[in-house]
Image 1 (tube, helix red, strand yellow):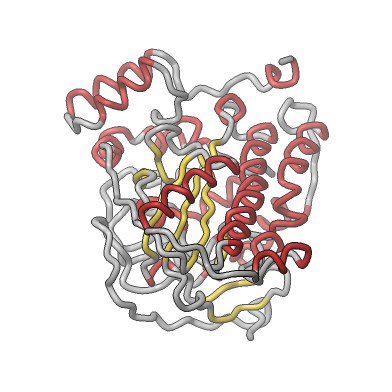
Image 2 (cartoon, helix red, strand yellow; image 1 turned 135 degrees about the vertical axis):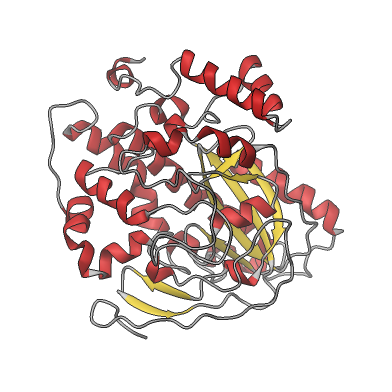
Length: 394
């Protein structure tokens, strides 16, 4: 295993098979996780200043959203992920461990034969349990080989090594967790950061419980947060949404206001299918996230197959995000951002008008999309919500 803080090597592209192949573009190779921007910030000397500003320095301000109390809220909501989940640190760690179950229930889990149900019935049960444990949305997909990271960068050990998922665990249960609408409207500050952190802590809780349930049925289960495999294409294949211009999954019910976790398993399951609902056509017209992005990291032009830098997974046609610019704003702000989520027209709670608008977007009529955008601006959606309201609420 190699310590990338001392030496960086190019990773050769690995060709993969094309099956299962969903009805949207899939990259021809696997992505090396060491090049993901939040990993690069820990080993790439080019971003040492930004990394220190984001991860190691605390500079409280008098402005609401950046005070000590706001940081305390943000950090508390992240704490289950940071202290026990470790989904951003590496695979097979903490609550995302691949290894068995708690010793106190092992005798129950290992007794008897695996539960036998049809894939259709077992999928129904899995979705029921996922929602019971806290999933806002859940779908099931086959795991395409391209979506598994070729290599992992472990942020605890600062080590870089090849990654392979266990044989047979090619079914993915993909779960989305809704983030709070009101606090997301306050981005970019610590109160909004708390809704992100709470999403990550819930991810660790949910994935762990789902994996434990599946092991109790007599099957393998690999819980995953941001580790092991790419979440967005898996969520698309599982029917949870489409990819937006801002590089984030857009769901029909919550827009981009979700966090994703998954469980890989050899439990026989029925797969869901990709369910587009007009997002791509709308994003071609909209461009609000690109115009409002503080770092101008979001592409304003057409889709392409070539990324902005090594933090992009090139080879697939989509809008690429310049993660280097994005992380640069995080450093300037000393806080995560989510402005693109806040201003996205899909970032609305359910309601008659919002649900009707989504049904119009599904028609993919350019004139209607323009009319919707006009209404978006006229109603003042996307403006920063007053952060003082959070602390004054009852």
